[in-house]
View 1 (cartoon, rainbow, N blue to C red):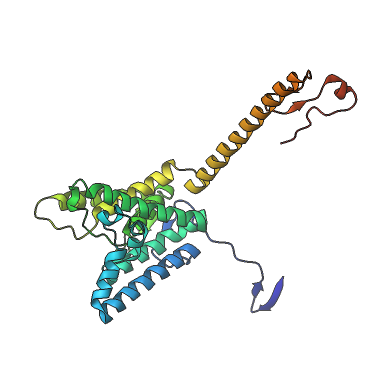
View 2 (view 1 turned 45 degrees about the horizontal axis):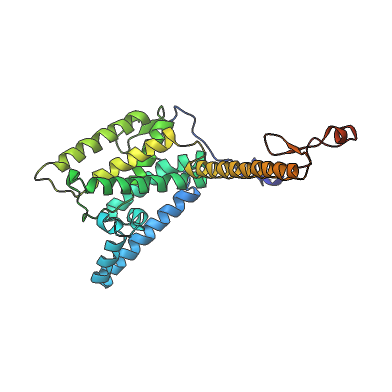
Length: 302
């Protein structure tokens, strides 16, 4: 329905449809839409960063304790601090750390959320965040990569790199403009190069005399779990797959109970010199006389 018309411009009440990029189109670092999940993740990360910055300025001791409690510390998680599997992703080490993570989350996450929807994208992001945390915890107890159970890890890089992995797998032929460098590269090659750099960096950090200032293990964990999600998990996400499996098992249990009740009832009726018959699904089969009189095949409907 037209509302007004001025200088050839028509205003319409119809809601504009989301714009999706055709495969193979150049994906430049312009300004994609702020989708729902991406917007709230960016705002929450910014709020936590601001809060911790204020606490560090006003009450340094309390600010440091708060940051420590929210960070991922493997030995704390093993003793019950399971919230750290998620909260560490909202804590950042500095301004540029959060800026680069949120920029990548916005630029690449918006496209995934547009195609997947709010719930699946948020599920995917948290899956990568937790996966990166679990990878870090597992490696910390091996002593590899310079990570120990007492080493703290912060940052959303695990979830963000999971997004980059998914983007490279799903939109591999799209070209990414490497701003500010006037060079474009296909997404699959960009992600492959990123994986190579992270792997080499993790190996170098594990060598003697190298500090562990960057959580390369968490980065690799995010890339790994992003790959696993896209490659092996159900198209509608693991939550949907789990719920489908639950209802399948529940329905199988109810069908078994009905068949068992039918067998018990047959035995009971035979003891009273009466014969009743049930099919393999536990549905009652009426006698032939009842069928001739218009009776249904089964008096029990499921």
